Picture 1 (cartoon, rainbow, N blue to C red):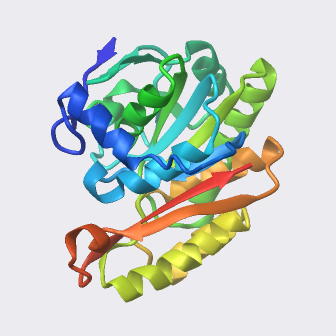
Picture 2 (picture 1 turned 90 degrees about the horizontal axis):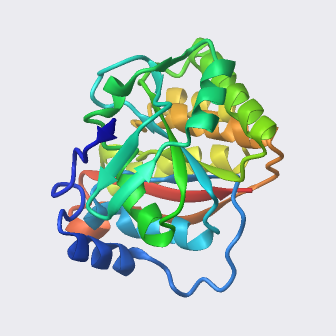
Picture 3 (picture 1 turned 60 degrees about the vertical axis):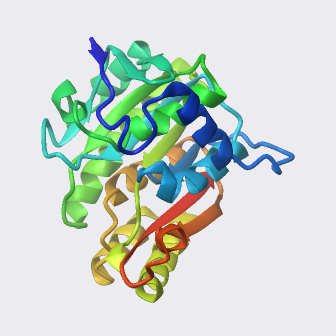
Length: 273
């Protein structure tokens, strides 16, 4: 199947030339040395708000052959943990194919994943990553995994851990050079001061590669972070694949674009390696 873009013209330009220019303006051309990343954390808001954070992350890493992209399910459609094992996703910059061999191997290793395209049809969190990847590397394949939002409790962390095991096992078996991307925004619609305070606590947990600390922080501080599940899966899978550290590449809020600091959304970009 060909999955048509759901948010072209909303989160990013529909016109290919305007979109390419928008992405180019978001990239950091001052980066002198790119790194091999096992994982990264990127935002998924409209490019005018969070594009520079995503651009800073993708400017920092070498483009692998395959990306595994995990994003929260904002629509509620489809299964709780939903993968697509076949198909092509289209954006204004072209078409990108799912790595079916890797996707099916991940699916085979997990009892919680459903092969359910419905979860991906109208969801933007994975889609908005693709134009950046298409602009920087037209030859990549990817595996999309959508995660529904749950309370940050031990049972949910257990499911995240099992899915992380499935990802790591599949990557190790196929020896696939890939980067795992967790698509998430951070605090939603709080003051700049409160958002920065809460987001710094979450960033600290990610930098320590501690998924439990991430869950505890989100719960204790009541952080309205939509993709802490995908981030936890990414941390756990990367650690199983040998990750030793994480680094913060860029943080900003929507207030820096709108000038309104009374209700902002936070965006953080991190690299795990």
